[in-house]
Image 1 (cartoon, helix red, strand yellow):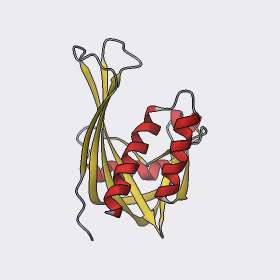
Image 2 (tube, one colour):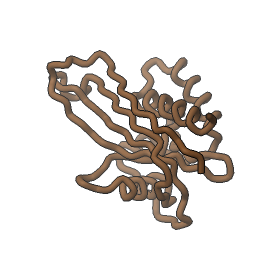
Image 3 (cartoon, one colour):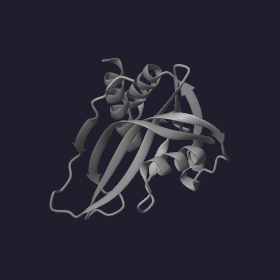
Image 4 (cartoon, helix red, strand yellow):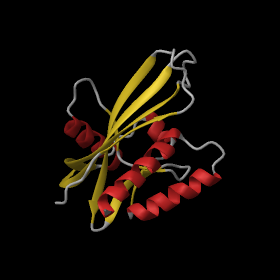
Length: 172
């Protein structure tokens, strides 16, 4: 396997540096099978990478395995660290705080084991469903959404940015 230089980026959107920071850590995976990648598509069309929040001191590989089963019914294991994206925004729930999300991105492989999809309530509301497509097609799709949606979601912006970083890593 080729050597990948992980990305490490900080993106800040109009944060008040005097506010306390509430941090959430997450693990996300790029799962490739026969030249296509596994994404979650929302009712609005957003394509995001499978993954989610780390619970307590949970290891990254366990988080990714748990989240991919919950969201797609498929189990994955971590192969290669791709990078970290730290994003800070004003907290939409607490105006006196900054929300920081640190996402760790990995190249992952399916294990062949299957589980039962078990979406959280908000994921059910978003009608999240697993879809397979090329990384390039997903980037193009999300770029179109970013231009046409009046209020694009933070996860659309986050994962689009990460997808572009990952594409650069995999093609250079």
